[in-house]
Image (cartoon, rainbow, N blue to C red):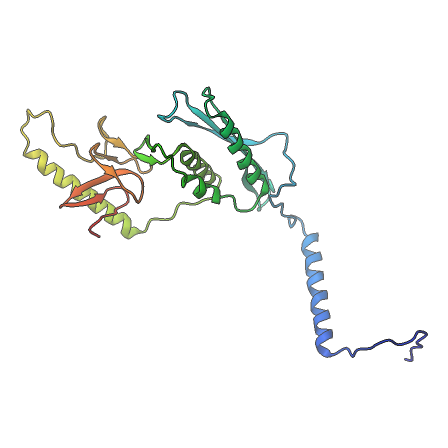
Length: 265
């Protein structure tokens, strides 16, 4: 079929087979995208700063009691539910508040919570906040919280609370401990218990200062460890690997009864 050209030709190009193949591929991709958008449930809502706050949010409040303050801190983290009722349903943190009767650190606490809330509402991967906060050290020194876990600062314990919350809603997961590592820890605990039992058998019945030992049922003088519920003697020192007071001397070597770490390998 002849085509009449009314305008002056300024340039031309020859359409090759490769050009036709690229155009066909682009058309196929566009059709697939249109079909996916037309399917029910395909519109997945992702978290970003343009999502407006709903009238109602669900959340959790955590009590934080430290030796630094007379009054406790109450940390509230509210979550937004994305794609509710669908297979893509996801719960994500949206805002955080900290309340306390202690007003000594009101300014930086308000500033910290506002910045954290802004990061939550930004969307994307917010789990990096946990590592950043837990790496903050107080120049005056840290403290041990309940369970014998060392906290280098108040900000680090706030990061620990955020970590627990992110694990509760499924954004963070604990690394699975291998069966070999569990067996090693059980072996070390059994060995320490047997060694301690032997020592106690050599102590007279009237001795009021018998050596404490690890037990399945914690005593009042034992240190309760959060997690598996094991108890460790109060004479145990802190493990730099798991930050738990569970290091004892076994066969002349410092050994952690919580994570299995040993200086002797």
